[in-house]
View (tube, rainbow, N blue to C red):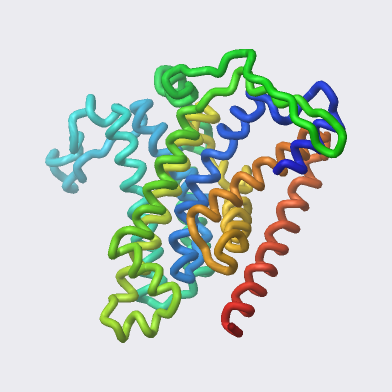
Length: 352
């Protein structure tokens, strides 16, 4: 990261990379990817792949926006040929509230994860095929709900979500000079702030890390990922924990969709998960994390580092004027390199 920062300092002169406003933008840009990749890390720890996370992300944002805007109401099923049923299952005033919309989005994510877990863990379908197929179903369902259009969120929600923690902002005189290689560089952190969505991402990452490292369920998930057969012989219900991993992964993906819609775009856009290449970026961040600190192992701290590396790298490429297609190519190259190094690290660990 220091190299990228210095490179941008040298290349652009007065348009410095290490500035308070730019770092705030980096925090804002990395929040959604950090949440999405942290959920994916849970599935990867158990040796499973989930290709439906981008679809779950769009679903979460879409359901959240539809409820908040009053365009989606949960009703009782109507009994054919009668007037029984059809009314709202919950008071309408509840269903367009922030809490209800958020819980509804998470519930839809849990359903997606439950289907993934049952199909993969209990029916024995390949995770690649099962989750990819469900991704298509989810995207089609969301298009049906939204008619393929964006759904705007209420202004009071976006104003809050796109704000900063306690409205804090660093004073303009937060600046230092450092010397490196005989050259002096200015680090100006004036205007630095903590976006609400970045704080939300940090809390979620800490919560997932605590769950995986400090709870019995988390440690059992790690054991299943390390050796499923040994875990089964030790009395661990391997299928149940794999199911739980898919559910957690999908729920966290829908939360990432809520954060994207409320804290970034201000609206839910159908298929934004694929259009933004979030699927590729999430896997790249996770595999980058697998070659840091604990080589060849997926872990939340490594994923967070991978997200920061990617965000800094691509922000630097944008500042340097690298075209969009080259950034996409770079993303693919980084993913292949990370996969290669992760595989080599695992092979070396097994030999020792």
